[in-house]
Amino acid sequence: GSNVRATKDERDEAWEAAALRMWRRARPSKVLSGVAIRPAFVEIFHAVQDSINAWQYNIDDTDLCAALVHKAMQGVRIRLILDHKNFYSSPCARQGKRVKELYDAGCQLRLLRTGPSVTHQMHSKAGIFDAGLPSQVMLIGTCNWTHNGFENNLEHVMMNYEAECIGEMMENFEGDWLVASPVTDEDIQVMWERQKRRDARYLLERRTRNSKSCLLYTSPSPRDGLLSRMPS
Image (cartoon, rainbow, N blue to C red):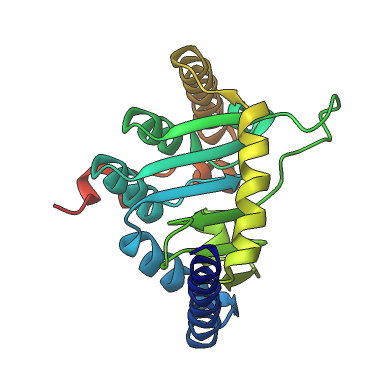
């Protein structure tokens, strides 16, 4: 009995190993750059069915945040680890609004301090999609999930399907998740008030000095209407 069971277990393990090798050959890792980055993110975001776990230093891309909101409303578990300091004072003009919408949609947000100094940052840009499922994939690289990251900057992102690598990253994520602080209603309120004060300050500077940088920061944009862009 035990020998037969062991033989069957060995066959099952061999079959799983062979299936994994075939999967890796069918879905090799690849490096993305430039205009190839956004389409890959869009495809993966729309395909995800179970979970999204990510570290993000900045996040304000309207289309991807709309996809996150939509997935959260469909029941996908979304957990984002953000930099503690940058959460309250992001240089991205739209991050405050996007983060508030993600929070209101039920995305789980936590803030991570990586050291006592303001120069210590949670600077990772990585996302793991459908961890533990055959469709699992990781996107990791230099690109923040921002308009600048996808549209203006020179960035590189690796798309990785290797189960072992993704498993190690998920262990890392779970460790960071445990020590990170959950975002509360009070955190959102403080962040939002600071965002509104920055907006008002830049508007005043725009009126008094006609600053081009302020114009870029505060100009109305069709991208700001996130919920109106939600898929039906």
